[in-house]
Amino acid sequence: MKKFKMIKLFVLVFAFNFCVMNFAHATPSTQIWNPSTDIQAVKTWHLGIDNYFSVKDNKDHPVAFPTDVGLTYGLVKNLEVGIDFFEPSENPVQFNAKYGFSEKEVIPAIAFGLCNAGTKKDVTDYNIIYGVVAKTFNPIGRISLGYYIGNKKLLVDEIGDKANTGLIATWDKAISDKVWAAVDYASGKSFYGSTSLGFSYLFAPNTSIIFAYTIYNNDKITVNNTVTTQLDINF
Image (cartoon, rainbow, N blue to C red; front, side, top):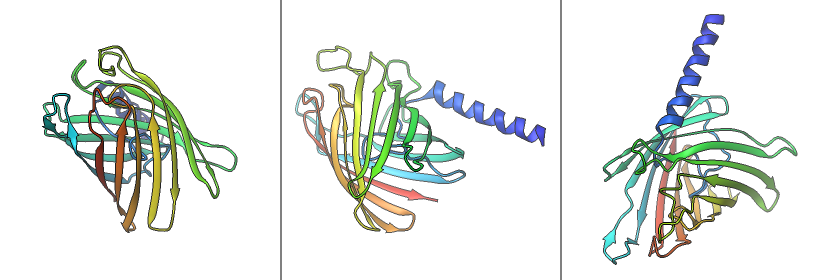
């Protein structure tokens, strides 16, 4: 029994360090854009397919964010790890991890993690470290507040000054047993700063899709807002 516990601890530590040391542009359990306090259940998988539309670069040439196909796994209680594939992309494989606790009576949910951290130095290693707390206030819904900090060489504004810190704020609520709505915000003048408004529809007990509109804080970097569809399947 002791040997089994030691093996389990070794696997946990190895997996966590792998994620911390190898991260790229990857998505943990989110609201629309921001990380949430939700954690994938133990030994369950989450498949997400996120698409973004209507993007233009600063020269007014049509471009598109890559499609994100991601897998998130509940490794142990309160800990999820994930891998994402962004295509088309020169560095498509990226990772994420998050640890947290759910709400309990008056105690809010809390989560912290690392995302958007890549394998190529100063190209995909955004290394966004974040912390989020959330509390449900009926009938208003759930309010989430947090803070993030990332790679100051990549999270910059239009003139190259660092813009690698910011606040996170989100409202979300289940409108019915099939419809969920959310508004989430991240401050900052890098590509990460934005406001997203959207809703999801539950097609089956384990399958839903989010439809959302994202408004970016800095129109010098992202000159056109985006429409996103995000298919989510749990198994």
